[in-house]
Length: 146
Image (cartoon, rainbow, N blue to C red; front, side):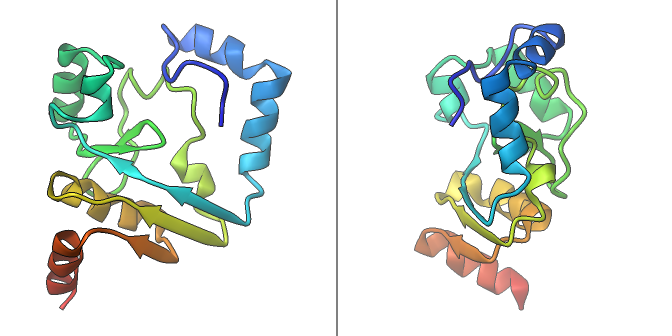
């Protein structure tokens, strides 16, 4: 948990905030986790980003145009599970999910039909040891795996 805004106004402010001892300690500890529980977010009009005004409509449209299918830890990823190169990702004050891939136990807990594509991408990126989804998403993922 970070006591900071989700997105800094610009990359320079982000870097300055990351120099704060309290924040830098959280980022350092994240590299040594034994276990983590993470959720994936979508880009629909009902997403957290839209509902709480964390991103503008133009930013969301730009993320989609750049190939984003959703987010992990507020970092936007494409369908292949890659963190995309986008200005929004340059402002995020959250641990990069790529740096957490070495965590021994990863639980991905996310559900809902609108999140299917980002859940698939998160599976590729994180390779979780446990997956918690709703029945509809689970059925689709099992069918695709066959």
